[in-house]
Image (cartoon, rainbow, N blue to C red; front, side):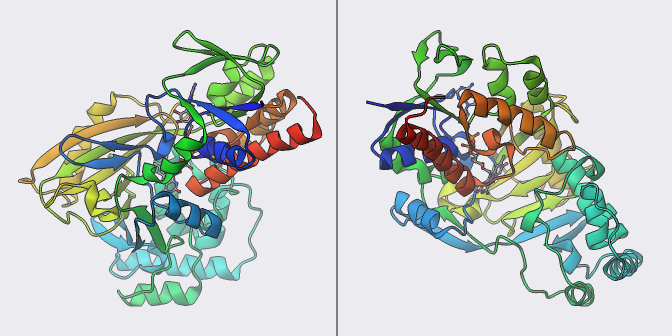
Amino acid sequence: MTQVTILGAGMAGFGAAHRLHHEAVESVIFEQHPYHGGHTASHRYGQGFLFDEGPHVSFTKVERIQELFAASVQQRYQTLTTRVDNHWKGHWIKHPVQCNLYGLPTDLVVEILKDFIQAQQSEPGEIRNYADWLIASFGRTFAETFPMEYGLKYHTTTADNMTTEWVGPRLYQANLEEVLRGALTPSTPDVHYISHFRYPTHGGFVSYLDPFLEQTTLRLAHRVTRIDPARKTLRFANGSESRYEHLVSSLPLPELVPMLVDAPAEVVAAAERLACTEAVIVNLGIGRPEVHDAHWTYFYDRDYFFTRMSTPHLQSPNNVPPGCSSLQVECYYSKKYRPLDRRPEDCIEPVLRDLRRCGLLHEDDEILLAEAMHVPYANVIFDLDRPEALATVHGYLDELGIAYCGRYGEWGYIWTDQAFMSGENAAQKVLDRLTSGSVA
Ligand SMILES: Cc1cc2nc3c(=O)[nH]c(=O)nc-3n(C[C@H](O)[C@H](O)[C@H](O)COP(=O)(O)OP(=O)(O)OC[C@H]3O[C@@H](n4cnc5c(N)ncnc54)[C@H](O)[C@@H]3O)c2cc1C
């Protein structure tokens, strides 16, 4: 009986297992951690607080996935209307900033409007990078004051070192009327690209994976350290070995490639050029309700230690003990552009300091929980090195017949639904090979 080996027990790994299960093909998943879920793991703390690995909400527009996830939690989810805001130099601004300029310094608003109108009326020049795109889309003053500043904190590199293929709907492109209305009135329509989201009522985001556990064999605490594509063997950090017939991998490419026996030097070098942010996520449990009313907030100022903050207690009241609230704060680094310069737990104090500085935390707030998580792979950086390096790595994996998938296998800016479907597609590739009888 054919068995397919899958590396990584996140959304992509389970998507692959689900597709194989549907075709009655057995699979085994090897996962380094003693728990499943990958980036969608949820962690419960003794005090009754629950935190995902960074804010995780489901906003898929794909009906099949909506239904699949809803059935996974036996329809026990809530649908929430997204509330997003921004913090910039002491101002709390509704999202997106460009449509909500009301109340910002007059000189700044005038410059933003002048530049925006000029950008709208000019022929866009050559768009060589993300910086060019921002200036052509929003005008120079807005681009340099807001998205370029935020981008530097979030992506850890400058906009002129980035491509634009990841942007999609992520940055709202307002028309002149929306910008003018938002400059003249405090009351504007909601235009965030995530208008609503779903979140499981109980158990955190990882609950969406519950039924898939029965569709595969899960081998936790198996960190792959070596893959021999010629002998078709895997070696694990715990000393064990395993043979495989067909391999699907959702491992981050910069981890996967150096494990491959006899990988050519240029492929290893290409994998090293792939850049990704790493995150320190600070989870805080607070002894009072409703500490903030937005689901997430973007922080622009460079002298604020963190980049984004979210409120897990608003995703589900069951994420906190009664009468409490919670904040989850993301601080971004990257090996290539901004190496992590401290222990994750050393991020807690500066985070608390800046949460007090902007008024979210009060001096007398009871901090019931303060924990730091380290997430070594967070967001793929679409720097100018990525396209060529990725083509080299993917080309080599294709030669070897290793089906790659997920956020860090595709090396894309993809969400949970897309990661799941990416796993399904990788499994389909294996199924196609099985049907055609070809062995890579
Ligand atoms: C901060 C943050 C917030 C996000 N918010 C959202 C959101 O709100 N909504 C949304 O839809 N998406 C969100 N995402 C994206 C979402 O997390 C990913 O798209 C998705 O979880 C990726 O799944 P994956 O299976 O591709 O990767 P992963 O979840 O990373 O799975 C890969 C697995 O491989 C394992 N692994 C790695 N190396 C080895 C090894 N050597 N041996 C064995 N196992 C190994 C890892 O432990 C992991 O379990 C967010 C991402 C981040 C970083």
